[in-house]
Structures are given as structure tokens and as C-alpha cells.
Length: 263
Ligand code: BV8
Ligand code: ZN
Image (tube, rainbow, N blue to C red):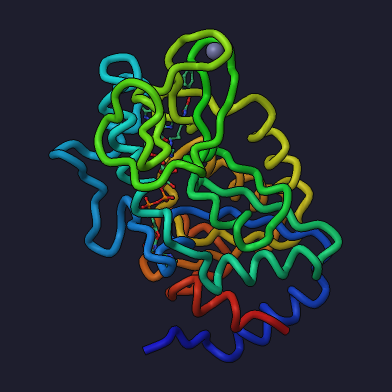
């Protein structure tokens, strides 16, 4: 049964969207759920891989202790993502960029689906799974052209899949490369949080879409919007710790709710 927004709330939200000048949106894994991307939590899911919770694998400690295992985990996720496409939630948010004087979109996701949907200047708080970064010299390389990396491709680039050896060796300095994502226990890239925080502090309307609202500093952003007096809306099929703090918590799927808000 598609999500039905309570009529009075729908009228209220459409009215606010009609007059909004600055909108801030924070998304999490749930915005990609209808594209087929598994979430980490919620809906009975708990991101577990090879018996380890995802926040143990996606951690700085794992980077230090077992870089090949970290690559295997991200190769597995990239293989899942490869054929997936943006869903109506991503597409609606991309269309909002033309509707408002200022739309600030920050995402916790690393899947690149907001950009694929046409959103520009996305604040990727936790980096991007499609890029490798050198552990020493900061050189970056795209992983887009690799197809179906299965296991560790040893030696030079694998002819069949275009996959680089694992861990890829930096072409500039010869050191090992790592996934260009922010792991648990790591700082966010300089500037990305601060820029998103400016958008949150200046907005008059804030949406929090598809996040379990547990991860910081990302969740500071809607808190900043609330503190700045923004009307704040959560969209999530399940309640979260943020549900009681916002002005409206719509229990529904992002791909069904966001398109209904179009006025
Ligand atoms: C930092 C990239 C400071 C990798 C991610 C102890 C030790 C170390 C750190 C900490 C600690 N305790 C707390 C911390 C801080 C930690 C943190 O917040 N931990 C939490 C879990 C308690 N944060 C950090 O470590 C951050 N760095 O604090 O550095 C520091 C200071 C000094 C020195 C060093 C460091 C870095 C956090 C970034 C981690 N990287 N991603 C990867 O992708 O593998 S976070 C990871 O979780 C993903 O990005 C994911 O997006 C994010 C959050 O999860 P959600 O997006 O919310 O996804 P989730 O599955 O949880 O929920 C999905 C929701 O969608 C559900 O609610 C579901 O109901 C809903 N849903 C489902 N279907 C739909 C839907 N909604 C709408 N529509 C649908 N159809
Ligand atoms: Zn290098």
C-alpha cells in the first residue's frame, strides 16, 4: 500500500515548499533503498558481512589491520550497486534544485545515486565508493570502469574486468590505495561538514530522509537546522531518535512520499 500523507499535513507541506527560499536535505541509506541498495539498519536489516557488523568492517581499525578485507567489502558493495539506478526520491530531490533559490543536499551515502539522478554540488559527507584514494599522497582514481570485481585481482590490471590489483597501487607514489570513504573513527573530509552546516543553519525548511539518525557528526546537521528555527520534516517508514524532535515525521518510503510533495 503506497504511503498516504495525511491531507492536512500534505497541504501544510506544499504551502511551505511553495514559499521556501532555502531548503536543507540530509539523506541516509533509506533514500537508496527503493533503488535496491541494502540499508545498514531498519526494516529488520542489520548490515552484517562475513559475521561482522558493518560498522566494524567500515572502520579505521579495519583499514589499519586488514586493508585487503576492506577492499573485499567495498568491492562486494560496488558490485551490488553497479546496475542500480536512482529512484523517484533521488529524482525529486534533483528536480528541487531548480525549484528553490537555495537547496543544500547533504548525504551520508557513498553510492553516488544523488549525482546520478542529476543533483549538483552534493555534500558527500562520507565520501564516495566509486573513488580510490592513496593512503600516502592523496592521489585519487576512479573505480567506475572496473566491472564485477570478484575477489582480489592479483598482479596487474585484470584483463577481463579491468580491475586493478587489490589493494590498488598508487600510480604516483607506489603506495597502497584505499576506498575514498569516511570510515567509523575517521574525521570527515575538511570543509564538507562545515559547508553543509552553513546550509543547515540558513535554511527555513529541512528534510531528513531515510536515516536511522544515529551517526554523528552527520546528525548534527538537522539539529543545527532545528536550532536555527527551520520547519523540520522526517521521512522514514520507521520511527527514529529524531522523530520526536522534528515538526512532522512522515512514516513512509522516500520514493513514494517525496514525489507527492510536489506542488
Ligand atoms: C567521527 C561510509 C570523530 C562507510 C559511514 C566510538 C568510536 C569511534 C567513533 C564513534 C564511537 N561512538 C560514536 C562515534 C562516532 C561515530 C558514530 O556516529 N557512530 C554511531 C554509529 C554511534 N561517527 C564516526 O566515527 C564519524 N567520525 O566521529 O570522527 C573523530 C574525532 C577525532 C578523531 C577521529 C575521529 C564517521 C562516521 C562515518 C562512518 N561512515 N559510511 C560505508 O558506507 O561503509 S556511516 C554509514 O552509516 C553509512 O554512511 C550510512 O549511511 C550511515 C548512517 O546510516 P543511515 O544512512 O542512517 O542508514 P541506516 O541503514 O542506519 O538507516 C536506514 C534508514 O532508512 C532506517 O531508519 C530505515 O527505516 C530507513 N528506510 C528504509 N527504507 C526506506 C527508509 N527510509 C525512507 N524510504 C525508504 N524506502
Ligand atoms: Zn600515492
